[in-house]
Image (cartoon, rainbow, N blue to C red; front, side):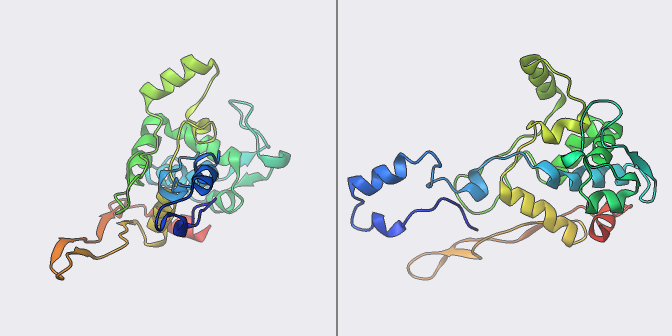
Amino acid sequence: MVSRPSFNPNWFVNGISEKNWNRINNNSSYPMTDKVIAGEYPPGSTFKIVTGSAALQENKVKPNELIYDSGRHWLVDMRNAGGEALGYINFKTALSASDNVYFYEMGNRLGIDLLDKYAKDFGFGKKTGIDLHGEANGLIASPAYKQKYLKKNGFLVIPSTLPLVRVYSSNTYSIAQMLSAVATDGKRLNHILVTKIINDDGSVVKPLILNWKDLCRCPRKPWTWCKKA
């Protein structure tokens, strides 16, 4: 778990100097903030795993259904990077190419309520529970938040564009946990760094146990298609 920029922890041994403290404290990149668990960032294209899994599970799209990518979505002027247009593509091609237009359409078919449901299932919008201090919750774009966001910014946002306009956010550890659920066929593991906390005499203060949240209740097994892509 790497967080940048870093600092030398040895500076704090026997008391940190004023020079080194100012060097850390006045750094606009906040080196003392653990970016892995406390930094909150828009998930961008990694969120396509959530959108795609939801669309497959809710039968909003068939894995081999062909959707036409003209380079922009038909409802709003949202485009692929670099002006790319892939023509007729299925789920596997769309995910492997990280095609924006295809997943705009998946979001459009799902709607914000289903997007939120699956975002929560994959662990967004709440702490993962890792045994470290300072973890951020992240943000899920609920309908109430969407309405507030629209009023504040005054432009149209359909569900398909939400992941790219910063109304979802997460720490990088949450994203790693989400991807691990795909790798383990729908089991979202609450990782721990140590197995137990002990006293000086060796007695156990608190055991820490790995917990799994099984997402395999999804009969269509959308992660199978994600892994194929």
